[in-house]
Image (cartoon, rainbow, N blue to C red; front, top):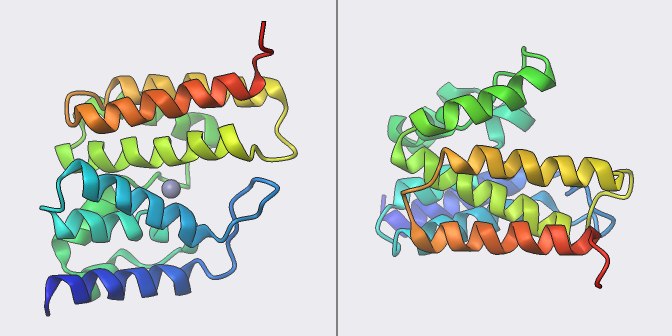
Length: 182
Ligand code: ZN
């Protein structure tokens, strides 16, 4: 299949698999907006040279949030895509605190493509917190999220200066959103 057809097929699958998901902010954006943003970020960071990474970005939350079987992703989009998605998927059988700690500890050991994808994911999430933070998140929780994201990102650096800069800008914007102007 032509590459761009496969990318569209992944966008279509992502829209269906996350049809009932919304972002946590008060705007309640459809979840596909997040998936498209992450796909755009990795596409730009790689100059459009890695189609499978873009497809994996569109599908990066499918296993974790929608319980799409890895095998279905492999059968439909190939084992290369499935392996990238699996690499960025948390083990949901672990308590949340353990998962968050593992993300920090495991970041540096990820493949270059998984690092790009995780950095794009964190950038998108920080942008959302800056613009439209979840209504039930206290300032403390927002501060803790930004601190945690920075710790994960520390292990993801060295793969794309452009994406790292976008991450840093998103982290600053998120901080500015809860820091009074002096
Ligand atoms: Zn995500």
